[in-house]
Image (cartoon, rainbow, N blue to C red; front, side):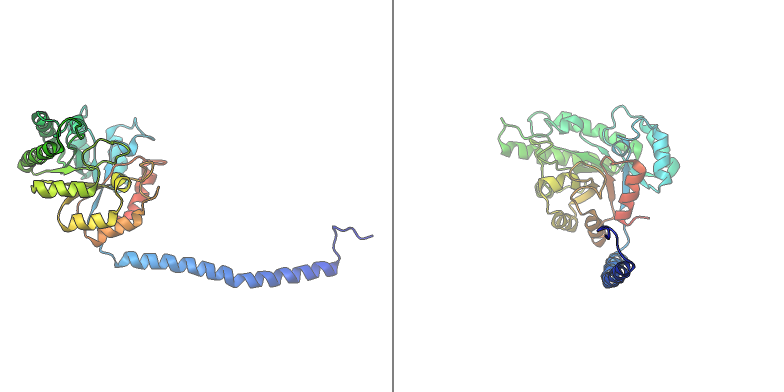
Length: 318
């Protein structure tokens, strides 16, 4: 009796013919899929080639970009690595406790510019300008930040105006914000730098006064000072408001945006992770011919080198 799991030569011959015929039928489909993928890649490349070349400059975050994988890496090694990968600029957050001269020496060694540092410290995240009687403390800290910016050659001071008070009428708080920012703008203007107001998302800082680009635009318009502008931080604005493209177009067209920062959502990892279509965002910034800094204020999924390489690719930066 023939084993039910065995085949005769005729059976094998028939099976081979069926297999070859089936494979031949699938071949055009496979080739079509390959051609479609190649066509899409070609169209993306053609689209990129029709855009203006990037005028912006990526700024490596010397703290956050190294925080998880190389937090103990000396400052000079961070600069060496960033420069070896083509970095032209950098940013820092808080300047307290840092040897600013060391940062400046290393930056000058590699021809790197400083895009930003923190402008208002803890007071900007708490009493700010919203609590009556705190303006002097706010402006005193901002002056220290301006002096730090002079040492670093930094252009932008990322700033906040405080939490909304539950005991002071909003009309009073708002007037204090406008008045205080005009005075801070004068301090910034004397040094040739900018106060860049950053909206924060309501999930991280639910009581912060400014939580959207539109709220920030309103304040910047009313302050009406050439050295008080907006920091368009995409990580926060995607969560608090969305409408990134529309707001970028509006803010840049009116000259309200001075600085742009990037970071994935959720997780605050490098662009290319999370829900934001950063290829589109960078292309839009190219179309709008944004020529300022783009601060990489985010952590990294695996390593600084991998993250920076990915951001450069998305940004179209050599």
